[in-house]
Image (tube, rainbow, N blue to C red; front, side):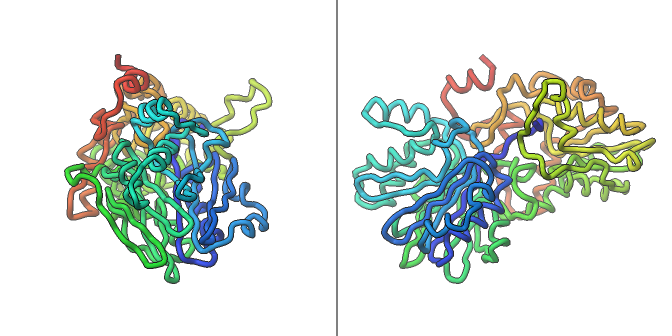
Length: 469
């Protein structure tokens, strides 16, 4: 398994189109990179909610045509999941669908609530019974318990009681709601298709179904869509800082997506250019660790004036996990996914560009693989700062003690991965790159680099996961 941060989740929704479920399937297909453990679609025909959920990839869960015959209606929401909170279990696959005193509701959630366990404990003490271990269910319980008259009021009342990251697609029998948390940690875009409204974690899903991108759902915005059109609300306190996740640009989002009002691909290329300016080195070629390091490697090569080559080839037909019939072949994990081209590498001084180093074990194997292919020198360049702190806002990261940069200097990491040199893009370079693509400054969440968390979390979780106390 790759030594990488795991993607979080992806949400998609459409309201007012006769092919709602089919288009949601395509939208989830475009968002598959955000989660591969499970997926689901919930559709409404105006009277009832119908759902189909399963473990596995979108194409596997929805492999039969008759599934869509059981998802009628002109509105639908969908979700692809990686388990950032709750286990890898069928009961946690989303969207979560419930019936309560005021009807039916389905919720798809990208993000993580930092106070979910505390809210859950309080709800259970007062009699609530949970059917999943996902923190998303706490929002549904809070909504169902609200005595407010309108759905929007009940939803806002519930969200006022939770803290953390959430981009939500919500479906009832007659309306769809899109919500983004006040900090705007996770992306959520709004579009149109043949008069229907569409929401998606990333705009690449709009391209696939030929929808028109309109704008982002703003941080702290609640958008309600029904037969009368779209209404927008901003119920949260205005003093909350906009702190979108910087790692969406570094790794998670697809390079052909527009998030946080910028296209991802040129931003990643600029990270590479900044890296070349900060840390040049004499070499014969630049290569990437595919696929996440590709754009930054191209930017590095262009800025440095060094040829770019495909020195590592990725096997795209290997999933996140694979069958290991014997312990003796366990070390083949990286080789199943990457293979060096000796004719490109042999006898060369090589610059290898990647987006991040987590534990360092995979980087070590990759460097050794390149050396075994005949490289004379291997210089590693990382297009982000050292990742020294875990994320609590929707990314599955290890505890701090497992992050190599939390306990080792850059020189020590270089020795561990057996590189001739190792350099990371620093925060100033990161900010300089982003400044090329916007005329207003955004205070991105950089907690994984700095440890400065925009939304605080309970002390118990801090001590357990950070490993500081």
